[in-house]
Amino acid sequence: MNDYAAKVLEMRKAQAPWESEFIQSVTEVFESIGTLLDSDSRYEKNKILERITVPERIITFQVPWIDDNGEIQVNTGYRVQFNSAIGPYKGGLRFHPTVNLSVLKFLGFEQMFKNALTTLPMGGGKGGSDFNPKGKSDREIMTFCQNFMRELYRHIGPNTDVPAGDIGVGAREIGYLFGQYKRVANVFNGVLTGKGLGWGGSLVRAEATGFGAIYFVQYMLARKNEKIEGKRVAISGFGNVAWGAALKAVRLGAKVITISGPDGYILDEAGLNEEKVAYMLELRSSGRDIVAPYAEKFAGSKFVAGRKPWEVPADIAMPCAIQNELNGDDAAALVNNGIGLVAEVSNMGCTPEAIECFAKNDITFAPGKAVNAGGVATSGLEMSQNAGHGYWTAEEVDARLHGIMSGIHNSCVNNGIQADGSINYVKGANIAGFRTVAEAMIAQGV
Ligand code: 2IT
Image (tube, rainbow, N blue to C red; front, side):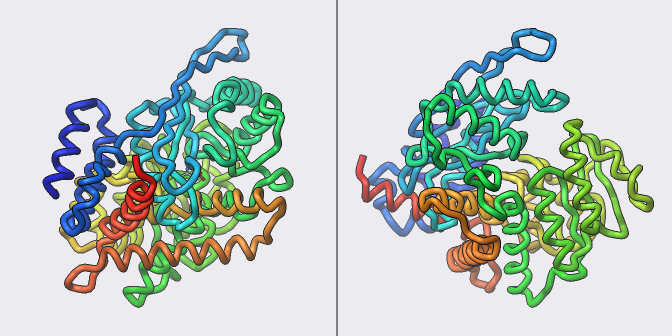
């Protein structure tokens, strides 16, 4: 690691050694940008690494709400406004029991570079709560969202900070959050993305993260003169992102053989079809956070309890669930089974040991901040439509999404090309994203 980067990393570690996810994400970026830092002393002179690792603002608040039994519950709400050098803070809200400041700082840090990669004017932010939506009634979800927004509304706005969904926050939650924002702020604007069609939402936004990830995989394959058609694809998760990826993969003739949940994974050797992909939505709306019922519904598939899909032989692996879901042992299993390509779709889905294992074995690996950027990119397109008081067709949005994913792939190639002609996508994505943000910070002064 570059000396300056190592010094700042040590400083951040000493300040908050318990923020393991945040330190992991900073380490990955700092390890990748050494050549850029070596070649340009302005970054150190302007203390860019010191500044870029401290969120511009963190808002923490209490979210009290009343459950269906009339009991008062209390959760913690957060919004980490990480960096606004290139646009208003932009990034999702996560409702999940594992949410804490370290997790939201890592997500906000990643978001800043991801948003820069899209080339749209969006800064980095992230937020959410340790609220667990699992097993909650619709009324409880609505009450929680309303009480969350009762505080958050004063910190956000279409030119200030534009939240969206993430794990545990989908179309239903965005609806309740938007309704409350509108009530208390008395304004109808594009303050959130992922809105419903007909009240400001964009066509293709729901599919965009998964679709964009598959477009990115197609560009990766094209460099190796390969096609996705006929490839065995192992996907984890069964939420919005996994659903979009499975849908596009199936439509392009790939064989999606796994999905997974916290309870285990489904192995479907026949491959998913559009009916089975649609069933993922039913599984999700059950609110139980399990995939086991899939095996009861579709003969020939089986449920493997308590395990992850990375033990299944596949050509392409796409983690679509949560951070650190694919570790060094999982990576070794994939390599032993002849994996050809790994596209990380979840944010920081792979541990450093896993990424190292792929690198050692010359497995093409692309990081989440590049692969999953189609989601936030399409949020950016939703912001444009809102600002222009109109809507674009699905074809228009999809064409722009394609163009943005192609541009991100080109950035990774241009900044990550190695002496042997192979691409280090981690390095390429981090250098391209970092440079854009850092240059804007330098231009704007302190
Ligand atoms: O991780 C992500 O990029 C998201 N959850 C989407 C963020 C957004 O603002 O659409």
